[in-house]
Amino acid sequence: MIAIAHFLLGALIGMSLENLLLIALLAFISHFLLDAIPHFDQGSFKHRKEDLTARDWGFIVLDVLIGFALALFLAFKFSFWQVAFGAFFAVLPDVINNFAWKFKLLKKPFFKQFHELHDKIGFKLTPEFLWLGILLEGVVIATILALLFFS
Ligand SMILES: [Zn+2]
Image 1: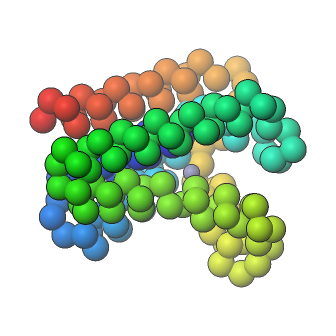
Image 2 (image 1 turned 90 degrees about the vertical axis):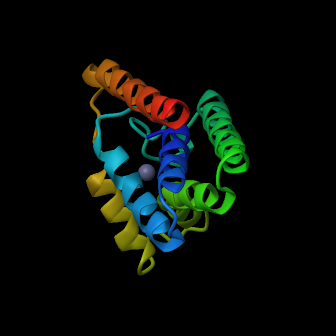
């Protein structure tokens, strides 16, 4: 899913619990749960970095900045370390993957297995179901936002 969804769910987990270790664990797992839902992100149809256009990169940067800003806002508003831990660990799987990609570590032990696991769990959206991916992603983000602000 897009980074905003991961940041928000991680923040929600952080707001709901006290124990940092438990928050880190659940937030990390939450990443894979969200990725298993049919969704659209910049990697859905473009599997190589070379295929990403300037517009895709613009979207990715904006997505990460907005997600980060929202998590920071929530961290200052609620329990700082809990929310920060939740948000960080919820995004971590994509950070590990992109780190491996950037530094050409995808064939190395750990990074290879991690990438394969992330890839296997992530829902593979086909172009004819793009609408469903966007719809479900919207519903997920709206639900998390509702839980964050109205509970
Ligand atoms: Zn992911």
